[in-house]
Image (cartoon, rainbow over all chains, first blue to last red; front, side, top):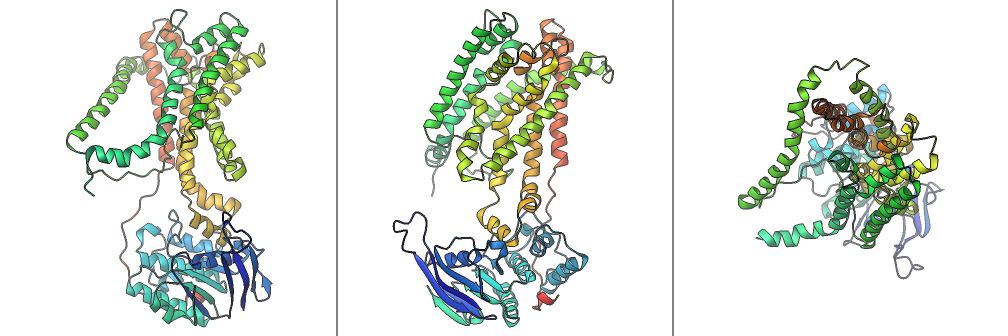
Length: 208
Length: 374
């Protein structure tokens, strides 16, 4: 269970630094998806960045299975993020981009390499392991980003507009992949402007 | 929006150029102000001297160290004052734009008279640059072709070995120093120091630095070839402002989202350098190394203070040959220096050539399956 309690944040330049601009309280069970939406600046990305550890919270706690996450750096949190863009390293090929999710030094075993190849094949990207992100369409890139996130096997998935701008087919494919992960007990927080995404994926919706 | 001609220049070009101009003007001034080699080659001497030539004469011929130190201080205060003024403007003072190895988009207004004027300017400068080069090739080729290049006894061979013995370490020092400066720049508190470090060689000209070292270490240095390490170090420092600009841009191209992704994936330390920084930096670093080696190969400032006439580097040999009216030999040396530089830059280019991308792939049909159990 993810338990977020009194998680606050204010910008360092804020005139009133003692009062957080945002404060978040919610719980999320494994296999659940919380969708958040709101206008620009409402705090969607701030919440995801706080959970991922990209921003330092000014107070409160994030607990996952009784473990306090706030003092942990991003690489020690049981979390994977997928953004709308900038998910892939442009100078590395598809297989290496995914492989970095399995080992940060790309020291992959034969089995792990086969896993990557098989995973690519199963999402319709067979034989594209050697291609660069610039040679893929938007939907293909997001599939690669999602593959990397899923192969990491972390129990918490943070999704910041991951399906925005994709064509209906690509969107449908990625929605299917995410639903399967939910079925496997992965908890998700989805920031999305799209009502259809929220309807398909979310168990609860939170308007910020 | 239908903007044309002067309005485009006023609204788009000028705001981009304006903040860079003070730094650029100061750079050009500094380069001209410290053009020791050109003044010497074209006949600088007691009758037509500059501050740098005067320092050189005071140190090497008149042994008037007090005068040399005073002249060096004058030189330092002029260069330092100028750059202090530029920095005080508080503007963006990067001397060269950050290189990202990308092609700017073609401009639609670059046609007709504007295109002709641009072409004419480029052609004029190309002729100004190419004519002396052609003269060197025409006069130098016969001399170079008949020279036994691999004979270790020839002055050209010995000068080449000496030049490379200084220039290769100088290039390496410059690259290492650049990396250290850039790495230190990641820490917010060191940012100002690292920013200034790139300008220091412009504020303190090579000959001023060399004068100081000459005075510090005399009489042990300067008479023979013992100061070569110092020459390499000073040459490396002088290359820093240019090399820093080559490296900063590609390093900055690792944007914030990519850094966050890297943090989350645990790509830290050596792994971050190996997989994220090195692929972006290997081409600029190779070019930086070539710059460092090239600038040091052509150095005729610091080497004039510390070098020995009996064991010259290539530029010193060239100067000696010109001074004794061996014009064919001088042209051959000049041509060899150009060929050497071409070889170094070509080698840097070939060794770090980027892989070519294949064309865009069409999306394929996809089946949704559980990939985590793949």
